[in-house]
Length: 215
Ligand code: CTP
Image 1: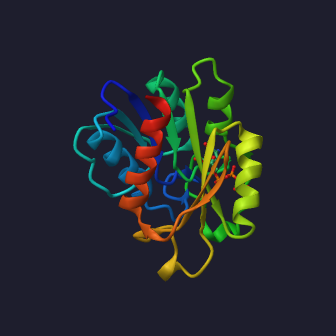
Image 2: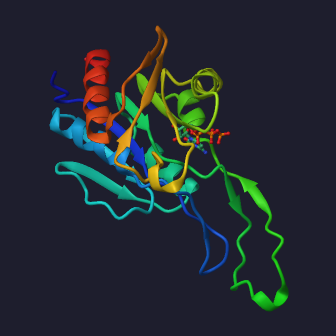
């Protein structure tokens, strides 16, 4: 199904929250799933804005990419990209930033006492925004009670759908950073358990579902 004339907003990758001029707080998100979704949406004819955290991935053809580092920058870039018919927020946004030290923390000063400050919840804020996309899709990275936690996020954040994935397990075989994914799609109609497949295939199927919903 064609997405010609439809604007789709995608966030992908981790955020990096600076600690001092040389150190950051990061996570293991590779950006692959979000980039695959942006690519599949562009291939389906959509106008795609991809707001990407720090990742080393090529921009998919036909996708308008905005690079950011921090959660606050990602939030601003998302707002600037609106309006959009659908938003798929795949990014692993840091829930916390650290009170920034203007100078490098020195080892000689001993283990630093970092002060954590809350970051904006981009998905929850978008759900409340007057420019809320018609279809708002979040991702849920869980290590236990995957579906239960995803349903709680759907309700708590005001998303229409949540794509839940299990990110437990050792680094070598982890979904975060890996090529494959096994997701559970939580919609208003229930939960679909998709078999394990490549991130490209997850993206293709999800974009097909999105096209049916927004057209
Ligand atoms: N998300 C967001 N802004 C944040 C945190 C998360 O937009 N500050 C979005 C993610 O892009 C994803 C969804 O919310 O679509 C769920 O992210 P996840 O990290 O699984 O959930 P958290 O809210 O961080 O909850 P927790 O870490 O406690 O599981």
